[in-house]
Image 1 (cartoon, rainbow, N blue to C red):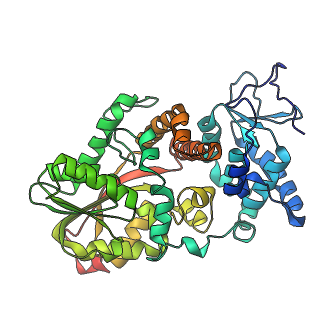
Image 2 (image 1 turned 90 degrees about the vertical axis):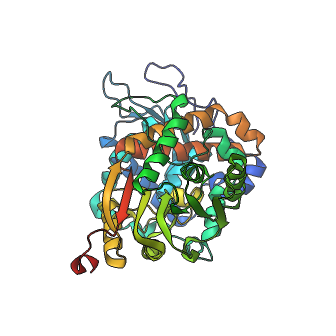
Image 3 (image 1 turned 45 degrees about the horizontal axis):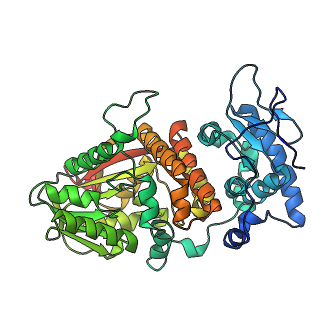
Length: 446
């Protein structure tokens, strides 16, 4: 059933889109799992269970959910709650019953549900993510939900393909929503108090501030031999070279390498900066400092030891390491480490978020590096993502002009909002971390 939605006053419900998205034949071919909800004998059983679990989960979530039959869940007197509008409840239940979080995201891409406040809807769910499914049923996660495909393991043979699926989409696409620095990681705003909304005009300077703080933490200055793991589009290379450092940066994205090299040459630093298409595991040489910005998320837990062992191997005596990493609570990392999610399938294949506890443990067990400084800046990432999301949404016509279809646009908006919600809920955080070898005893090295 798909009848016009009405709010409590009886007026038609307005939402982000005027009509439910309909995939074109070309989109249906490109996005088969979005175009067609799961079918099959077991799907009906799973969808019925999922529908009950979803309604159970709504009891503790501050979201107003509207169903096509007029039923409203989550209406609390005069309180104004973000609205989640279910247009196709059967398809919605089929997707989440079969795919869990993957199905939840695909159902948004398909238009099974919509909203006029995507972050507002997702944040309460992120706040209660550990309690949405009753604890006795959480043990079934590994049995009923999809598994990580072996093709997305971050081995040397797979990693470049995983990276290309995201970062090689198009430099022009990223330029649509990033600021002039082309920096795709959390900014660090100068004055960000509770409830503060940073203006777009502050973003570029906030990105430079983030980079400069990392370079300061790593002790980068004139004559420093710097290794950067994960080039991005070259902003850190530029700022390090401007300090007088000699930089080697490695990336697995050919698109990023091309643009970063162009920017370096235009700035007149080609003699100080070398940007290679190279896996971090293959890096040789000795460096006074190593910096890596939000790259460890693409490494995978299985390869964290070799990642840090590589850094340990190439770091000169007395050298410093500065890493910016997205983190999550350790218990949630452990609980979700084997879960294949919507983000894995559509955005970051092979990705894995870490925790401070895990980073400290792997460096202590596998290297001579020790975490000596850390700064949390999750609120800054929430604002960074908001600015990206608003700019991406405002420039949807530019995205279409680049050849990206409507389903891709909905996918990307969901990704940016999903990420922002995680930081606003405190489920995710981001840290700038410093690792050194200072004052290690034999006991520390064990």
